[in-house]
Length: 206
Image (cartoon, rainbow, N blue to C red; front, top):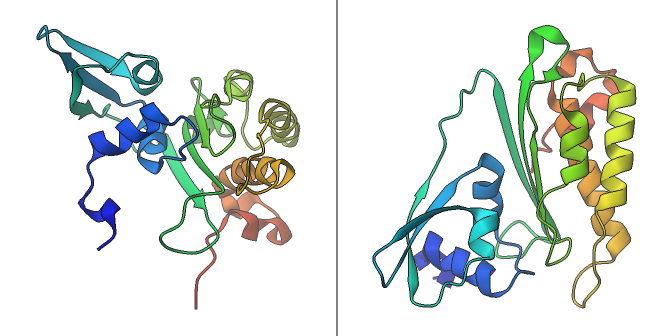
């Protein structure tokens, strides 16, 4: 039985805390949705922290008590997570990515608030694509110029490191761009030209 099958959420987050380069799928999913963790120290005080704040917190003699998930209306929020791996199971990701967007589909898929665009496997310090997140606020997601600029900004701020056995930085940067492109294509796919549509669809394994 793989060790991860008997692991815990807190244990996974503790590994991420100790090794920032770890491409934790749990961390990525929770950070994408905006979850909080409650932490207690030996003085009995309880802190409620974002996942980013948790990484910067000294956890000596502290434990994670619980994870708090925010309520999200599925009618306005879209959440996508991805894990690009060398094989289907039991493999660390080359790159993993999470996207949370609040869009108004009645106004040409306008982004209503700052989205959350999170990647793992880039470098130990990278969590959010902050420039791209800020740029998308108030913009029409399916506008070609919006997509082009978002991809340009993402390509600038995603700067993968290179340590064996990781794949090449250029490949991992390309994966990050491809994931954003795929998410955008998934919105109102019927309006996308057929030759581009498959870029936003799942590939069926046979």
